Image 1 (cartoon, one colour):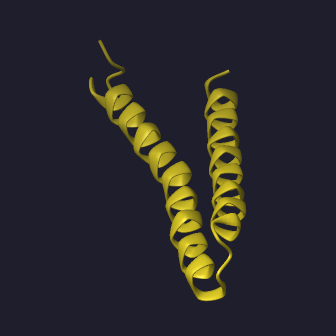
Image 2 (cartoon, helix red, strand yellow):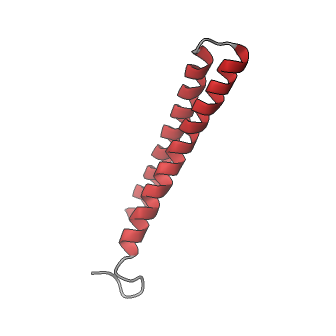
Length: 78
């Protein structure tokens, strides 16, 4: 079931923590990219171009952050 020193649900809690951290580390940069891009696009009249560029930057940052987190988690389990 589980190791006696960590309890039976340690693996479940660890997995939930990883999923939560993955969601936040990818979702926050994407949402910020969308919000900042929308604001800058309205402010400077970029006709959607500024929004797309900043959103894509947020998307890239979020995906890279998620990749790094998963790579670290896999390295810990080796």
